[in-house]
Length: 213
Image (cartoon, rainbow, N blue to C red; front, side, top):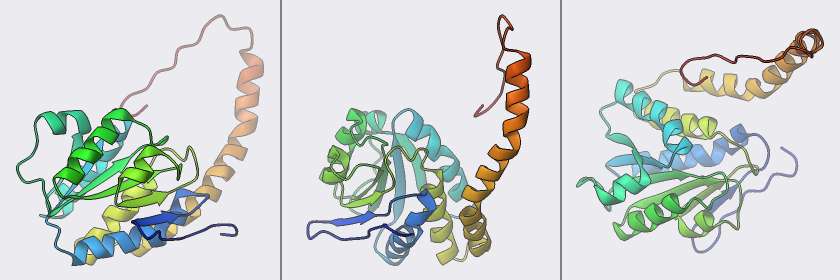
């Protein structure tokens, strides 16, 4: 993608790729390859609020495909009730849109004290989380949620272990997704416009849903 940058600092690896989250694929794959081939024995997705909820599907993805230990945890709770299996052989993956979430920053320090490899997904290179973790993967600012990055990492890791056969097809679909979503939005525009005109004077509306809705 024109204008993207990808660089590594001398202090730690900092991967930057502006634009769509799928643009971070090469860096996310490299991380998955290194973790898969390295000494690490477990992975923890550590979040707070929305970032914890966003990690839960990938905990389940691992649990249903692999015996490799993976947990999604709430950062503050994890500090107060630590897992005895968490330590130098662990990978701690964090995500913060702004890079300033206090509970996350506190848990990054906790993870570093335990000797874990710390990885941070964020959108701001000068943010506190970008300075605190060992590995920084930078998407465009406010590129929330982090599903594409988490899914790419998890699927690549499982693929390397021979536990997920659909990686190439998944990536092809993810790369096609941005244009597909734009097309869907354009198709929905007339429907939304007609609804807005019809109900412009309606006194109140109910929005209903279930699950993530």
